[in-house]
Length: 310
Image (cartoon, rainbow, N blue to C red; front, side):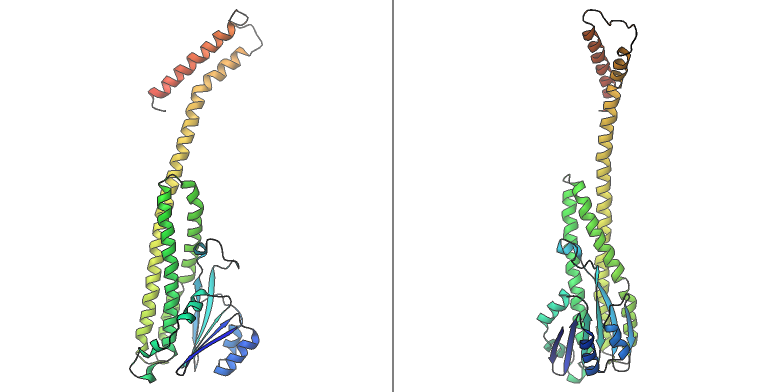
């Protein structure tokens, strides 16, 4: 599917799960190198940036917040790839599944904002459109981090309300998302640094300010990731400690009960032996045996209380 938006000489073309014919059509129209056109048809495993004569080719992967949807995404992917082809007056984005961030940007896209970047129309180029798009994508990630942070706060309240076992699954889901976020975003810094280098003589020097702003947005997202990860680690340690305390208390009670009733086992085994035993066969022998058991239980219980095992 091809989605195209234009404003005053600038064009944004968004291709969602494009066919080979659609990629070939756009590549021919905007002079995209055949090697790049071939790569646009298939997903890539790593982020990177390449400089060509008339455009810059950039690949970035963005994490998917599974816990934000309440369940794993339907296709099982933990990240989504966006390929950017940045020309002087056009921006081409290619992705292989629907991406909510791009859909939202298309709805709120107002190209007149680009005019605010410069007092001269000649200074406005597709790099500014790329800046606003990536800024919006990072902003979408911050929304996901805010949601994860709210989940961690809810987990904190439930942990101290005695729902430690129920929180194990929630914390595991949050941990999975945080690991996916870290794995996906850790390559952005190096890729964006390379983008700063390759754009120095491709766009005007004023554009370096916008690249610095993109790096600032990335650093803000990375800081949110680190903060959420630290909060998660603290909550998991607290939850594990409380679960361990409850388990130890249960084991302690079972051990004390075994200690108290152990003498009863000995008495029962003793009087069940097939031999001549005292009291056996005497009138009221059952009551004598039961009395011995009660005395032993009372003694063992008093001993446990004295040693503060109960």
